[in-house]
Image (cartoon, rainbow, N blue to C red; front, side):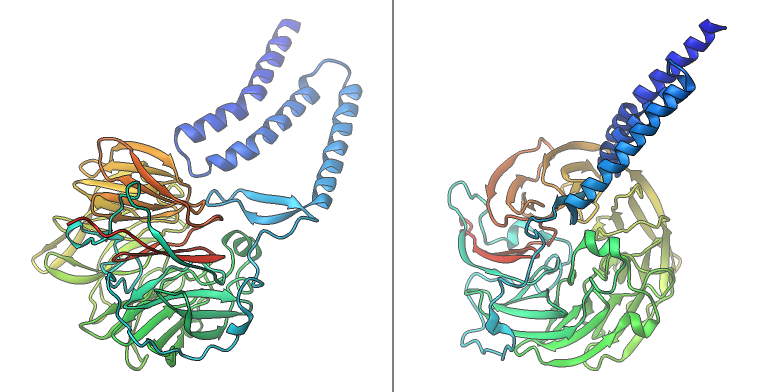
Length: 533
């Protein structure tokens, strides 16, 4: 009997010792999205298992074992109380969402408004004597002219050969909080930022960084969201302005949709989308950018979570609601106008599905179910043959979809699914039959024929990237910029440029030879070398 008891005791000890390392190994081997949390939490769980093993299987009397375990428990509680007294939670370390703790007496690492010029409280519109500037190619909306973060080689006028000639820094300036990017039209660069209790839409001079005008709304995502989300996600707006004609459309983190005049920032009309729909604020704030349909003169935005509508359209001139779709609720991806089988339609990645809509009425033409409560952020990417690539993280999988149009009826079917392309905050780009994206912090190349991974390398964190001809321009989470060859042959980083020095989730903007990058602390404009003819 003693032999069997000792055998059980040894086996239980092996399980207690191996459980945590095996769990950590499994999460990293399978590339589980929570693997960094597993690496943080599982060692504590392993210690707990060892303590339980000692309590129930250890040598010595029960009273002696219980006395030791009780004292260890008291020591753990006291240690926790001391840790809590000496440190404070200071938000997330990055896209992994791991917590950051600092000494209570340490200065705050979160951005402050102190660095912003004090004389910008009231900003009068400043005219531009010359609104156009040589070397600018307009980038009037999120991820560029086509909303796909891709600049074909024949349209690129800037050189990314930075080892031969470095980019020229034109200006650098403090900026309000938020994860917005820039839209650029002519000499005007527009973004959104949080300054105190107000959301600002700001227009800067592309050449000098001077503030030309600002529109201000009393709104703050931090004050509106639940505590954990606001601490991890940070303050401020997340979307990129959309410029159409002489109007600018912006969508704030709390659901304020503005139509402003491009030259002056004067408010034309405003809609409080979520309030009008009686929908709660999404956990991580409204993070989608307005889409303008120039043919029908409407602006389309994603709506609320937890039930439809998923999209709402407004007339660009008046702000009158044009239509609202059905659906099960929106997520964090921005809608796109995409031509499938020669028919232009709105493609939207929503909370529980991907849908195609009639731009004139919002009618849902086709639906691909995509269950899961976690956020879906990546843009839908069109491929030849009326196919779509949609990507996400949090175990949701990424899919290649075939959209069909037969006998007047629309349908969609899955071609393949993969967990080898997990875009958490970012989107993918496509070139020559391969997709490139930041897969949980590392750059990955995937074969579009079957979804298999070709390579994965480069620790760029949870940043963003653009595809510029045969190069990938990567905005690393740490703030620097990297140029990587867009080739399935191998991972090859070609150049690096120090740009920002703190956590950066904002998308970069390429406008011809001008490159704008920002985070929640500062913004920088570079003039890139001219492409050799």
